[in-house]
Image (spheres, rainbow, N blue to C red):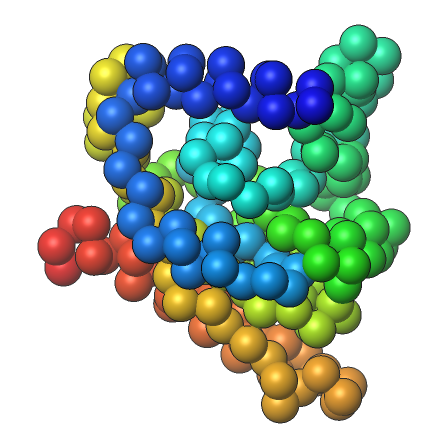
Length: 200
């Protein structure tokens, strides 16, 4: 109930501050199983816009430093955010994300690992791939394309791509080569969404 209350006002704020264009979100909302939402990461705005502009509840990863304040941690927990240690292999966070997804939840994992300037090479890391593989759930590539660098009343495009399934690999042990291949597949799907907005 608390989350619905907060999300309601967040949506109002976002609609006033930005002009947000969400494309093919039904590809995500129609999936009945758990899934991994994999967007490119440009600024902190995606962590608010992406979960707020969909009807389906989405769990988010947040850097562990945000949870040091008890009040902040209370709000983050209510908004379905769980901590991740950045800059090192956080197996507990990967396990947490995989457990949530395997139990039917949508979990947002930023494959770049950190924010990168828009237009730079995406350079995806295998985190989202690993979580989807362990949970045996699809990956939903999401392309975030801001106009005018997220400034007031600028347009922000959110494009949902086709779900990516790793059926052929669920019962096998992934080599580093295969993991990189699957990660590249997600990266290409996100780039395709970016290009569709840019008209390329």
